[in-house]
Amino acid sequence: MTDLLIRNVRIVTGAGADAVIEGGVAVSGGIIEAVGKTPDRAQEVIDGQGMILAPGLVNTHCHAGDSLFRGLVENLPLEPWLQTVWKAEGAILNPETCRLGARLGFAELALGGVTSVIDMFWFPEQTVQAAAEVGLRVSCGGLFFDPSGMDGKTAADRPDDARAFFDRHPPSDFMRPGVFPHGAYTVGPDNLRLAAELAREHDAIFSIHASETAFERQDVLTRHGATPVRLLHELGALDERAVLAHCVHLDDEEIAILAQTGAAVAHNPLSNLKLASGFARIPDMLAAGVRVTLGTDGAISGNDLDMWLAMRLAATIHKAATGRADAVSTHEALRMATQAGAEAMGLGDRIGTIEVGKQADMILIDVSGPHAAPMFDPLTHLVYSAGRADVRHVFVAGEQIVRDRRLTRIDIAPTLEAVRALAPRIRAAIA
Image 1 (cartoon, rainbow, N blue to C red):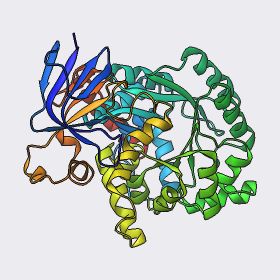
Image 2: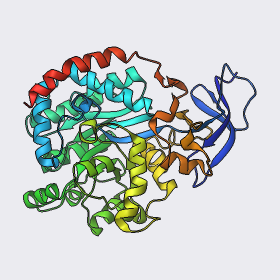
Image 3: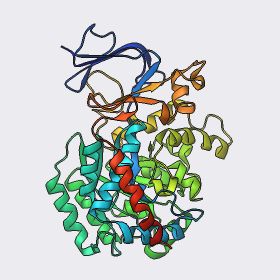
Image 4: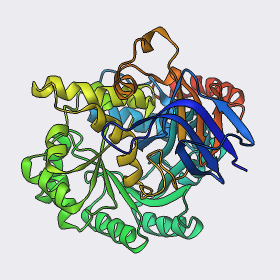
């Protein structure tokens, strides 16, 4: 018998420009077995009346552990902001606090309809454990960072740490190991090349900050004779495994390089706005065929991990920045947050859309409120009107990890209590 049946629901499949189906979705063994017309019975039946069913959101750039520092450092551009952030991290972070912060961040993501995340942070083993506690798919792995890190490691330790992480975590549908060099301004060319070689050797994600600010771009150019994207290209780091966060300051040639190599861009509109980093050339990237995905960055830079806000900003700010009302379409914005992100994680054939044969990563969005009436187009509602408070149920591979806006795997109350108890120490760290 079918395990799960969600019936009487409006389905935004994400599989086409305007794919909306009325009916139901049936799931067996975590796999979608029917969309639209479904069996009449199942072990569990959910009435989807008054809801939209859509693919789970995919966050391609996050620092979940940094949720501990939400709102701590304000009104600074990236470079001085980072110095204060690193001071706080150095005083507070250890395996226990990283797991605490990651659990907090992943709980926020799950409750907001995120089912998969690419996460870069210290102590990635704790990230793996926290994601499993909440029930999310995650990609994380060995950091590359040439200065002394918050984990007490040096540049010389990083390659072996990354190799050991791969040994401990063979790739699966739920855990995608990768290499995570922080940026071309904090990791030298030799270690960048080595990180890229490890990614190729393990057919793994290579995730890095790139050209987030004009200062970073000029700094890397001055030190290495090439801008971040050109340098990464020269080092052989750009291919379909690469996920470059931000890419705010690119020229035409760099956009062409990203399109030609198949590298993905993780667009983080909220942190780019809040840190005054600038406006990424997202419409130009899309026109050139660059694979654009969507991220929240960390809660310390954007103050929350709200993918709905990120999606709405991605759909709107570029219209104003370019003077073109069609700069980013509704479908393109939704695709950034779902299918394109799944593809960047190497899971495009398994998640990202509501289709028969794919794993059942699904969210049910409440559309009974005043802000959902009238509804002429469900896609438009999801991109421009819906919010994370509307997310009612969340499923990962058919398992319900959020039921009626509550996490099912963990009680988040002890985590919140522990974070609040830690807050005075965090504040004192930058006093």
